Amino acid sequence: MKVHIRYYAKYVDYTGTKIEDMEVERMTIAELLDVIKLKHSRLREDKTSLVALNSRFVNEGMIISDGDTVSIFPPVSGG
Amino acid sequence: MEVERYLSQVAVREIFPSGQKIIESSSIVVVGMGGTGSAIAEMMARMGIRKITIVDDDTIEVSNLNRQALYKENDIGLKKVDVAKVELLKINNDVEVNAIDQRLTHYNAEEILSEGDIILDGTDNYNARGVMNGASFKLKKPWIFTAVEGTVGYVKAIIPGKTSCLSCFGYPDQGEGISCTVQGVIPSAVRAISSLAVTVALKVLMERESSGDLVYMDVWKPTLETLPIPRNEGCKVCGENKFARG
Image (cartoon, rainbow over all chains, first blue to last red):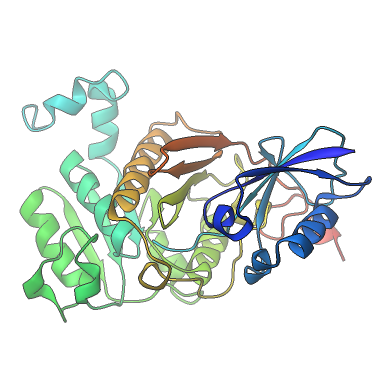
């Protein structure tokens, strides 16, 4: 199945793209994040990333579905 | 109420005299008096908030001057809270300013944060936000999370018992994070996030904010997105089932 991945803030630089489609099998958001980090190793610089499914933050144990949009944000800390 | 002083904001339908009355009877705690904290405190003082407690143990450095409100060249080396208090009172002498020269910790958080009707986050690290998140939940005090870096930032209202908290969506609650000086930040992003935080805080005080959505803003693109964050029943801080996880 195909999912749409959207990258935000510095992750656009880390991945070289704002959005990409990925063909993946049935898996959780956490597992998808692992797959994405294998492809884009700089994302591993942050121990935690914030992940939204279809523009809504949800538990990373949720299963993704065909056509879902997964948005990944860095854990911005400055102030 | 000084009618003339606040006329322009009272004329706004979202404020009106009823909202101004709430502003002038409310107290806030601003934790961290860096870029966001100092701008938040300045705006709140100008709007006529009754009392501001400011918390920070840092001194002013030259690298702060490009973005941190209230501080000037001849303040370098002085304590942020001391300078901020003087400047805030120059802006509005009707405001009560309580300056606390301390870093927020698990040991002092409840005493300090209980000073305000609402807490505003001007910190730059995960540790302090983790402390604020836990203490505000215990005190049942709302707080406004802010974070900014580069050209982007976040704002979220956290209202115990109503909205999700910081731990509900996996934001780190430990560690120093990366400071603005290291990561880089554009001053306009700091001011934009501060402005949004003040607006959200006013809405909470006026009981017109209950969503707890995360607002993501990029001032360079520019873009603004609002993303819902549902409460997490298994959240270790506010979850209904936090004790059932074993």
